[in-house]
Image (cartoon, rainbow, N blue to C red; front, side, top):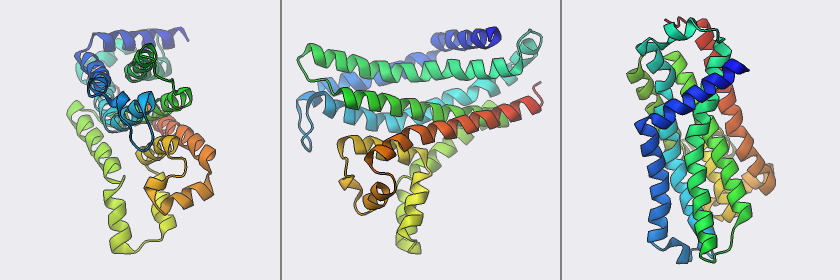
Length: 275
């Protein structure tokens, strides 16, 4: 455990000094500032006002920005260390591969998750100071969903970096995976429905296999429990899961994907040529 915590502290300290972390934090903090400057808390959309309206917008923006940030910054973790010769130094220290790998994993999770939730927490505190009602239920569930999304793409990032030996190849693979998942939100699935006349059950199953789509639908369910915005496909989801069941699915499924990807990445990392 001592090696695990040392690796965690090392990764956190390195991330805090990195320029990407500063830019990453400014992006999410800037989103909150912009939303306040545009008076989003004073607007009303489909009956939602105040902090609830701000959180709804913030979570949708995070869905597009967070995955690519996590992937691009994470894939350079192991692949970049291999190119820089860090492994040769690491192997000479009394730290096991498991402690080093999972310490880096946990440390990177802390650094990618903290700015996202802290920005949302600052928005809630600022809203309270201005007399707005606090949507505690929405804040807690949005935080849990962001934990799930961050963990999912962190695991995918470590898997990619374990499989590739070059930072450039790792970044290209990360961008390609993010693009495929993003396209499967709507574009390709609509094409499957229109051109292939696929059964609706198959299309919904493919959609729910996409962690981005699961996150998106779960976040929509918080302000639209009947999923009216999804149209007829909402009946299939609600009949299979129910509102509470789908929120639980939306939290655990991406975490399972990230954990499996992280474990498989460690298996490749341990069996591969480290130097």
